[in-house]
View 1 (spheres, rainbow, N blue to C red):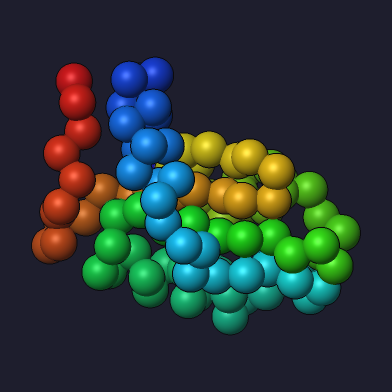
View 2: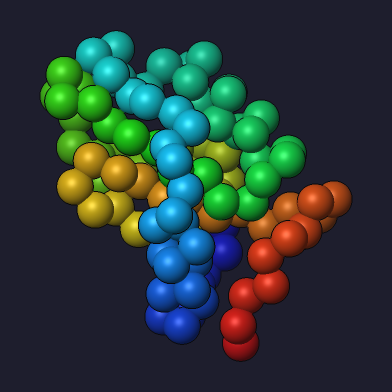
Length: 99
């Protein structure tokens, strides 16, 4: 997990705000299958947006920390029921972070 500066976090939040969530976490909460799918998605993208559905009783901030820990990614932002995660890609690097 990478420590982001406030400037980098703001830049990634701006990029993530235009993304559609590609994963939804619902009543079953964070299953191993969902975690594996999120980890897999980091092979082709560096920024992932996740939506926590209303029927999920877990706190989105806790879910974000769990996913980040299991996928070795960084929580960029949690706002309401939306989570944005970042993981720098070795093979498909597209995002140049500001210094």
